[in-house]
Image (cartoon, rainbow, N blue to C red; front, side, top):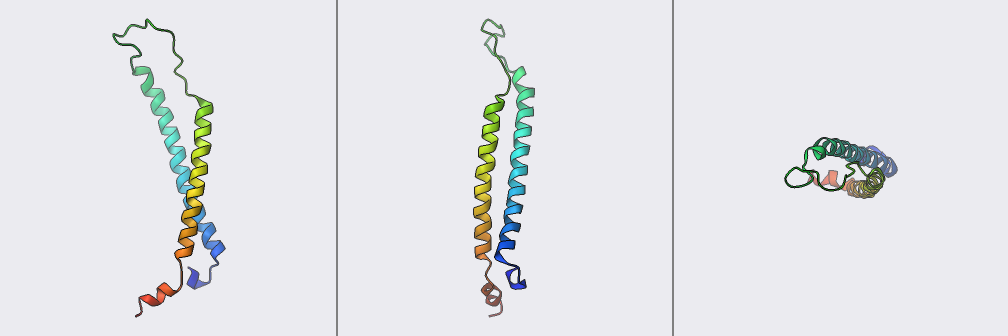
Length: 103
């Protein structure tokens, strides 16, 4: 792409957008599927051996604040990794590689 005259800035933006969209989609799908799975499975798990509910009443609700913090931290880390991957991709695109195959 660099040999066609596309600037490094444009290549970086395209690569970063691609990385960000893939990582964001994967992270959000993981959060959604994990939350749904927990909501379906946790009520079926016996809390105490023997099946009697002799213990205190437990709240089996998701910790939404912790989930939000985890989501923000994961997306932030994914953003850093995506930017590094895009930077390495752009740095590896040199026009001299086109001449290597002609030798």
